[in-house]
Image (cartoon, rainbow, N blue to C red; front, side, top):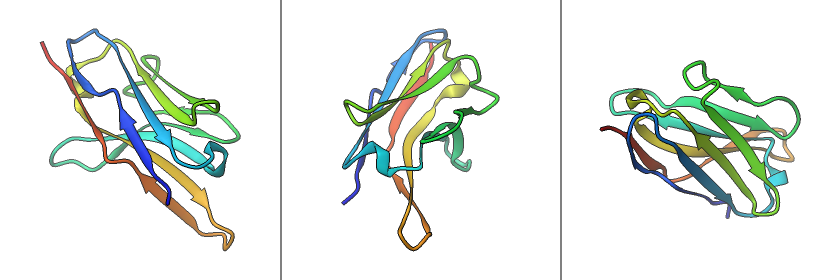
Length: 120
């Protein structure tokens, strides 16, 4: 069973940093795309950053230049380094993994989410 387990959330002051980590069960190479999304109450889940197995990473405009996503193949994790945090970065952050099945269909897997709160 595929599992994605996030950690690293918490409370931080504006301007501070946090590092989120998502441990992926199985092999990280099984996923075409790995990424981070966030959600605030009353809003849809939105993309923060994604890293495909091949190709370039993608960031939302609101985090470009402040956040950095990376894969660690030795630890089987996808990490999100968040710097210069702003109150509007507050939300529940979800790890996402996208796999292509032998049938050609795409399956998305989600972690349970980790809360990030940016407040003074």
